[in-house]
Length: 430
Image 1 (cartoon, rainbow, N blue to C red):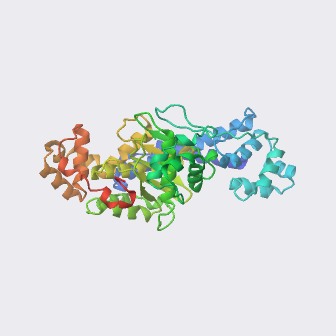
Image 2 (image 1 turned 90 degrees about the vertical axis):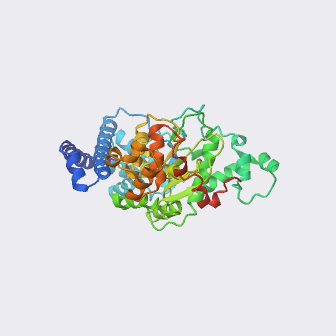
Image 3 (image 1 turned 90 degrees about the horizontal axis):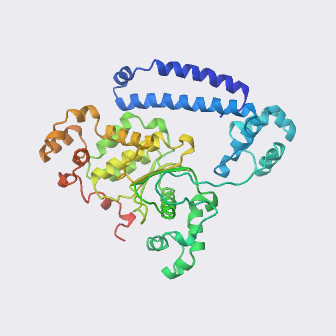
């Protein structure tokens, strides 16, 4: 976010250089240099994304500075600091002038704004809001793209609408040893407690999310499942903090090679944990129709899988799909949750990109275009190709079935019944 004229000038200069880099970008040259189409695409996408970010920042600052904005909205309390910065700019106040209004030094306001008031206490935030003559009204809004009915807002929770029976059966209510009938009667206490253990106050737990779904979605069940995934992820022993730079082409290739191992799903979990990504499994709740999700927690990214289909081909594609959501889409425009029903066709650019990158990472298009197995579709050709690529035959068989839209062929090679057994803690069949 641009907070002063000096940053504005620097950002304009950066944007000019970035536009030139994009105009000079040669995808074929970069692919050859990096020896990877995935990395070349990612490099161009990164430049394009950065250009969009800088453009957005410049336009926002110019609009605020013009004085045309008189109302600012936040989707949660965590956005209050940025509202304070925007309000100062919109009122035409410099950082020095605001400092004088609240009796602070200019450098202190600069520090506050540089870290978005992370070090300011509540009293200080209130004093600054008063100085800026802000009339603050709490607004909670659920931004969701699906075919569901009216979205839940923070003021409309009906605790009895949560899937209490399933939550009780799965023993999600920690410390509660009463009967199902008692759980149903005490839903207004049990569910808020369950949610607050992970997401704080339910009233501010509604954040920006995106849902890929081809059917009516039970939003109460979705929120409950999301809380459960966060709860399980908080207990995962990560090897370190998430570093996006650690996920390079070699790391992604290493993940696909793991698929060849008989315990590939468990090794994939460990592979992700080494770069700070938690992978957890929890069956979907009735009315959610989920395959997986990419979430952002306070500890870092989380991939949640439902293993709705107990097949290796499905496991590996869903895993890579959610992984690319983590790499490329979480945090974009404040996005912190992405939920996927991959049986559903989607015109969403983020979903199409994740689909494309997942397929490319598992079997590159160049290899697929000339693959004998793609056209012969015999067990022998599938096994031979998988051996050559050092990946699971299920990945090859699954790609053929999907492309042919025929889910009867090669049924003995997709790894039916070979995934859930690795995650007994998920309680499938309970």
